Amino acid sequence: MLKVDHIHKSYSQGGLFARNRKPVLHDVSFECLGGECLGIIGESGSGKSTLGRLMLGMERPDQGTILLEGKSVLDSKVRRGRISAVFQDYKSSINPFFNVEEAIMEPLRIQKKKPEGNSDSLKIDVLLSQVGLDSSYRSRYPHELSGGEVQRVCIARAISTEPQCIVLDEAISSLDVSVQTQVLHVLKELKEMYHMSYVFITHDIQAAAYICDRVIIFREGQIEEMVPTEQLKHVKSEYARKLLDHLITF
Ligand SMILES: Nc1ncnc2c1ncn2[C@@H]1O[C@H](COP(=O)(O)OP(=O)(O)OP(=O)(O)O)[C@@H](O)[C@H]1O
Image 1: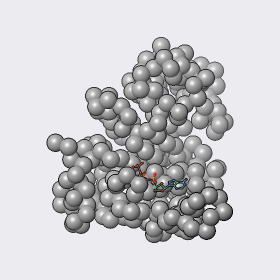
Image 2 (image 1 turned 90 degrees about the horizontal axis):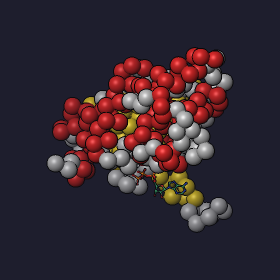
Image 3 (image 1 turned 120 degrees about the vertical axis):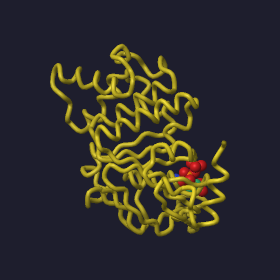
Image 4 (image 1 turned 45 degrees about the horizontal axis):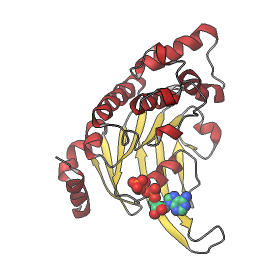
């Protein structure tokens, strides 16, 4: 479904015209299958978010390809409505001048799939109820919502076009633990309902164990190991074992 094939990425160090480049991703290949939740766990700075941005077509790889249903994500027509994202920094993810209704409808407007008349209103109510909010939220602005509520709006917005894939980059990390659990629950239900794929980038091994089908252990821009979630306790590499031991908090 989403195929990452021999990706390399580096960034210039010391300004735009500097010759030195810092390698961030090195020969990364994997496939996220239809309806699958694929976790990406790794230390800070290992390149997880860079990989997320490349999968979203926000940046170009130096080498390699990323294909969604066989077509390059670098083509905006391929991405539009088919792949979306929920980021950690939910506060800057939505325009503060848009109310909830406008924020949720924005991707559909861009995709020119805006429902007509009453179905417009119905769609917003359905999306809100799917993320556990009622229709009274439609006219509220981001500053009138809690962090958990804003993140629910971001999720409603991300699913509004019924994409094949959502990249969730530390999407629950800024929320309180109890709110994290609620949002994870919502995400799990939505995945079943829409048969979407998730790429779930996280530091949170418990969250990954709850929602992911397989997990990639990422190390310095490379895949160290990829395991089905039920095999997380039996990772082969020493590094993966140490990282997971370190991340387990109870
Ligand atoms: N636009 C950029 N220009 C230059 N260097 C960058 C850029 N984006 C990321 N990097 C560097 O690439 C490396 C990987 O960063 P990235 O954010 O992908 O890691 P990460 O695993 O997501 O980290 P974290 O878990 O802390 O978010 C870091 O050393 C970072 O400084």
